[in-house]
Image 1: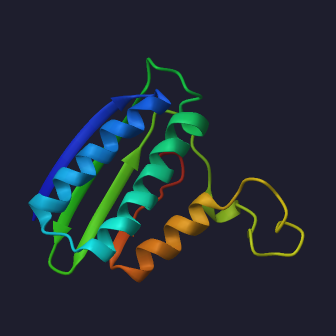
Image 2: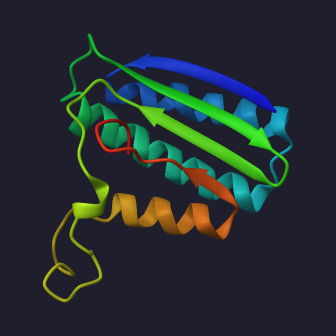
Length: 129
């Protein structure tokens, strides 16, 4: 199993560092273009959530990303230093009462994009997204 890791301070401008990291992973793991686009969206959304919501944009706290390539599966693990949350308790953004809300779609989007492409995001209660 191949694995690559990166840790960044919780500054929103570090999303560009993550984008470059994913570009490099595309080459190293030979990720096809369709999968690459969905991975880029999902990972950058999750990293943004970790920076803003998990670490409260505290630049002294880090966000950690690990990509692991297994046969037929890309495993993405993202962890912040915040208090965490239970992603199973998030409201469904497709429910009529949530349709017009500004936020609340990131985890929903990540889940659906990763399911389509045999990549796997591992949200854990207490860390990451």
